[in-house]
Length: 381
Ligand SMILES: Nc1ncnc2c1ncn2[C@@H]1O[C@H](COP(=O)(O)OP(=O)(O)OP(=O)(O)O)[C@@H](O)[C@H]1O
Ligand SMILES: [Mg+2]
Image (cartoon, rainbow, N blue to C red; front, side, top):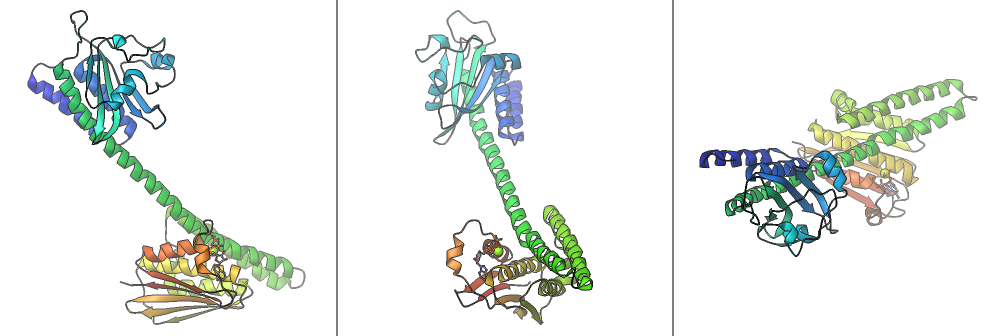
């Protein structure tokens, strides 16, 4: 491999750079084994990442063709020399791996190997995996190991960098998983807060139209137009939720007008009287307006669906630089602490998240028989 110290250094540096360039764990592993095999001029190289069940979560090889690999059969288990490398701190250099007392044989299609160099990949006390090389490509005296002390040292350097590259790749994958989980939560909340409520109103309005159609076709027609409008809004909300757009109405009309229209629609579609009063509120930062709207929607939805009350009042007032929103119903109330633990209810959780997400505060005041008040405060800005 080397023509002198400089080109050797260059080869090592190339290998290390290639390792740290990849973000996916599997790509990092592949680069590590390929680099190790090339730098140490071996016929075979492998890298195993152990799992907690006595097997390998990943086992990557280089120097073995795909057909050969398939013929060998299932992934190895942690036994024999492979297992020993995972529990040792130091490299192991053997002239003939088959003669080692720990050697337990290999599957029939496994290539024959004699000289062997193995090393754990460690990060602090944790063993991330083990690197193995077999059959040095050079003439050597019978019965001696082709791998030298220098090879061992070089593999040691590779293993240290492999540990860093592997840890980084794992962190990257973990953070990507978290991002996906966050995105799923966002979408669930958005669908819950916006779309499912529009559909709820739509269902009630359609039922009202069905009841009216024989008795009062003109009013039924009005209700059906309302059905069409609600369906269009639900479709818009769905699109906005999926593409992460703000509700169009907020951009065009601002929070106050959007809330007023929303409340008028609810007042018409549902039996309880729903009122709106607004005092001295200035425009708020976009994210706060959106959070306010979503919380108002969910609180109204809960009041109409669960409270059984006859009256729901919404008040939006100026509060310092920001604003405070209050939704009060005169219904049966509930015990807020009891619902906090119930996993399948998204509404209250989502309201709290939305408030804290914009630096605001949410309070739920309710007791059985006493009605409910949801209050949200945002700082403005
Ligand atoms: N205004 C209210 N009046 C009476 N009970 C309420 C009121 N708001 C909420 N609750 C009670 O608190 C529970 C939790 O509300 P939450 O909004 O978290 O979930 P949900 O409305 O049941 O379901 P989801 O909102 O996920 O569709 C409700 O099931 C209901 O029992
Ligand atoms: Mg709810």
